[in-house]
Length: 165
Image 1 (tube, rainbow, N blue to C red):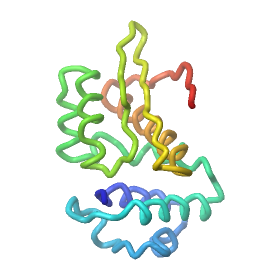
Image 2: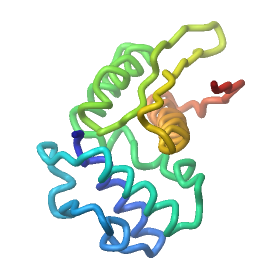
Image 3: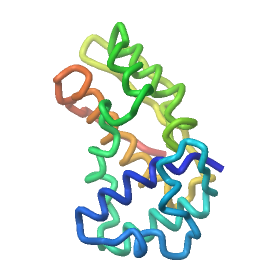
Image 4: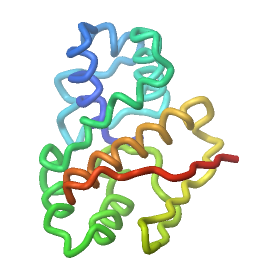
């Protein structure tokens, strides 16, 4: 079980594309009135259904690349405030790594973060339990991370190399 607050962002993003909440949540039994509550949790299968619905309804298997605006620092409440108030980008990223799963319902988190003179090396864990959602989670995490870095620093990150097992 994890928090459904991320689903609230998906609802907003899909409504902007003309897709109704009812269509997005079809087959999930998720209560759309409760997704903003930090106490409301959903199952992994409910989450998987929402993501699959997004891909089918938009006919876009790469929909995660257009969901970066969901994780804007200013829309993350006290969590975003903690990141904005961080003493460094590294500290803000450490806050994201530590709390994104429990506060945002994020399934993916960087396993390792290495400082380099020109940026960071980010290593994501292999998560076979995610199955077909692994690609979506990686894409969403990278794009939302880039959006947060831009919000926090004003700098748009440049991605170098990505490799996957």
